[in-house]
Amino acid sequence: MSPTPRKRLKHKPTSSSSSTSSISLMEPPKSMFPSKAELLRLMAVLAIASSVALACNFLLNFLNSTPKPFCDTLIIDPLDSISDSCQPCPSNGQCYQGKLECVHGYREHGNLCVEDGDINETAKKLSEWIESRLCEAYAQLLCDATGTAWTQEEDIWNDLDRHELLENFGSDNSAYLYTKSRTMGTIDSLLETRINSFGIKEFKCLDSVAEYYKPFTCRIRQWISRHVFVIVPVFALLVACTLLLVKVHQRWYLATRVEELYRQVCDILEENAVMSNNLNGKCESWLVASHLRDHLLLPRERKDPVLWKKVEELVQEDSRVDRYPKLVKGESKVVWEWQVAGSLRSSATRKTREGSKLTSGEGLSRSTDQQSHTSKTEPKALIF
Image 1 (cartoon, helix red, strand yellow):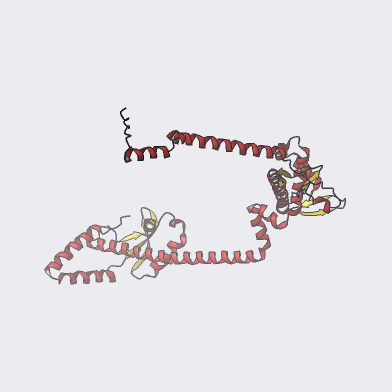
Image 2: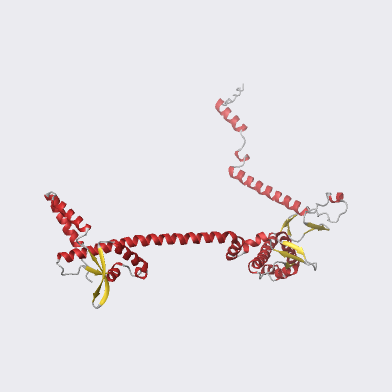
């Protein structure tokens, strides 16, 4: 009897190994997704491609699109100018066959005609130059009667031709003529115009503007001539008042100076007489009047005989002074002498000295010092 075959035992997988194999079957491989660097390169490629596509699209649209032509200016029916096939002609421009041409004084700026600033500035400067010349000539006529008032239009045109500002236009004859016409239009509004008997247009500066071009001396002369009937009486009144004030001041000065000289004469005569009395007649008690005059008067005052004459009148009226002629060095002179016996000034001086002796010892010493100082500064007697 054959032995029975042995069955192989199959090992059952464990639960852990079965779960791991199932998870590995469910996860996708790592090579299936791009890396971070690959994503950045992809985004850069897409951005460049988009930019190139947009640029090509814009270039094609720009090349394929043609601007609309301008509608002709000479169209009779205004409804025909409003059309989708053309754009209206701008102001200050002339359009023909779809092309724009700006009138003189304007330049093309896109689809518009704007004013030319250079031409306007040149026309403004030329008009100011013409106005200044005409106003100066008219002002000279009003002041000196040597200028001109009216200037013909042809002369102004010739002056403009010689101006250096028009040389900048060169061979552009249209701009040259337009600038001149623009200048004449501005002058026409600034100046006074008329048509003379020959039918020629003439220009003249306004009277109100010509006043500002007159010289200052001319304005003064004209103002004086217009107000002469007021200026002359006022000027005469001022001169009379000035002369009156000067005369009053001279009289006051003369009276003040005469009194001052008279007091000085009395002081000198009295001091000379007291000194002569104290010295027992060793010096003369009189003084020569002319010598005293030259001693007291200033050099400029000696030319005025009225001043010393007034002093002599006061001395003659003074009873304390004797006046008599005397022969001095062989010449007859008029001398003045002070009367010591009748001197009120000497008695008053003596009373003052006696009163000073009755003061206290301290006061006496102070008065003695003061008298000694006064005697040093006191002027000595004049010896003529």
